[in-house]
Image: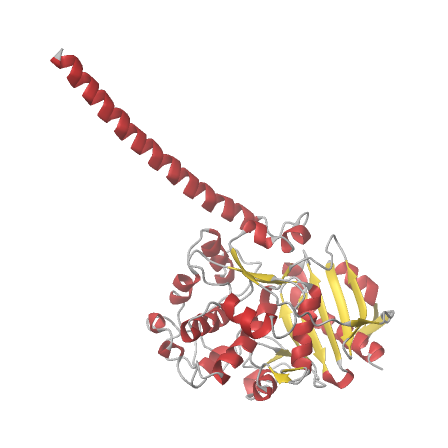
Length: 410
């Protein structure tokens, strides 16, 4: 009898231990399944057959935080006009409609004098589609940074970033000034080639896919050259700016954007910002916004940070953001830059500038502002061939935008 009781006790303990082990295996399996699922989604994000669908449903695939719009919506008037048929690029006439189709455009809007002159959606997108910004988000981060400076959260952009982020003292950002980070002149080594599997930008994508905090990746980067001497595009520079905003204000980027941009600007739709496992937003490119709200943000800069009589972003900040102030930041071919466009505080300045400037995101996203004609153009796209000729496509898009602005802005 005693032996039977002992056997039952051993069996019970064995079952409990087995249950615990099984439970651990289930949890581990689920955890790894989630990681594998995220990795699969990242790998297939740019699949030509579903890229346009992916770009308007990022919130269904990854963690995100909502940016709520307020009760008061700023409404555009409408006076629909035809786009010009042609533009000139490299001395040749090109078709506007052919370029729109070729670059897999998902939305295009043109506004002047608070009036929508053109608005059209393509490839399944609608006016309610929240399209991924990619690097257009960088210009939003710049605006938030300027607001944080004006509110005294950030004392001086000549301070080193490590004053706010001491965790980066062992990285390439040690001692680098905020201003040089704003101007993509940090000197940090970074390969932004999306077509290179082993590039830093794709390595960062795998960090994100495996749900590793962006801060860990940023801390792993090393210096390559002296700061403030060479314009080299480093997406993680913007991530550092976002981290500084969070540390300085005590608010996450989504909360700060909601308070300082979405509600004051009368955005008509909620937006959302992709986040990592720590809850930090992908400051460098994870914002998802409707086309009209992209245009509203462009209108803010068209009016030098003023929104219907209220200064949202300091005028001086807006001006500095679109004004290159050093030789390596000037537009045109130069030995101390990796591209021909000029740069300010997270905004691009075209070659042969005419006061125009733009935010650019990979795969064909853009917000283009041409003050001379009082025009703002916003474009969302899912250009599947970006890795083949993306930079050429971006340069050509500027000439198309200019042609549209000059024709509709008469």
